[in-house]
Amino acid sequence: MVRRIKDISELQESGFGQPWPRHGLKLLYWFADECISDAWNDDMILLCDPTGGDFGFHFFANRCNRPSVKLLPDVKFHYYVVGNLNSPGAYMLPDYVREDNTRRIEDNSNADRIIVCYPGENKFGKVYVTTHKDKSNYDPSATFHITRTLIWLIKAYDSINDFLRDTRYRTPNQTVPTNNPVWYYNPELRLWVPTLDQQASPLLLQNYDSEIRIDVEPPSTFYNSDVSVNVENDTEAQNHSETLPRKKRCCERFCTIL
Image 1 (cartoon, rainbow, N blue to C red):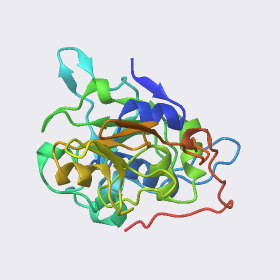
Image 2 (spheres, rainbow, N blue to C red):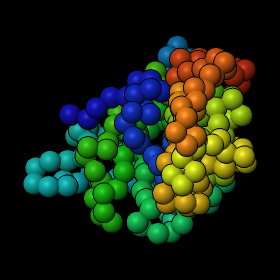
Image 3 (cartoon, rainbow, N blue to C red):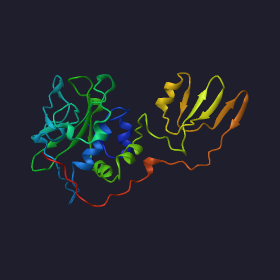
């Protein structure tokens, strides 16, 4: 049975689209924001035609990964998959989805997919996300049913950056908030030090010194020689998962169909 994901915290915990340079979370934001109209009477309309190859959509056969076991439930309608950045039509996807494709299999930068059950007439059934575990097969343990509740939550975000922030997705060039600096421990100096460059990220700091320990939150105590010094943090912590996204203006956005 495919696990359901119904809110942002569950999406984060699932690990889908993580870590960078995977593109699944960006792909999911695009799908909710650009490919689905605002709902009327709780009915969502698909704004692009999966059968025409828009954005790299193509037929998904839902074949067995192993004897008698299929990735998704058998239904009377066809499945269509999108997310392969090398597919014809994928050039129609926005730059923020395609920008980190390294074309290397080992970093999974092109491994994530969205699969839609499509009965036709611009309506859709269930939406799934999944990830390739090799060149030919998807990973059943990394396959999830994205509920309409979650799609509504994603559509409410004002920007892709807000959505990636709340799912804790970080890129190497992402700015570290000044009220939540990255601290590192220098074993030679025996001293906790905050980053001087607020553009630095944990990934870049790890490349600076393999012996350095990284903490996103400032430590409550650091050591300078043999003296213990307590650090007080008077900045109120922000829990992004508990912060409701701001609702967009109710307007309908349409996909380009060639």
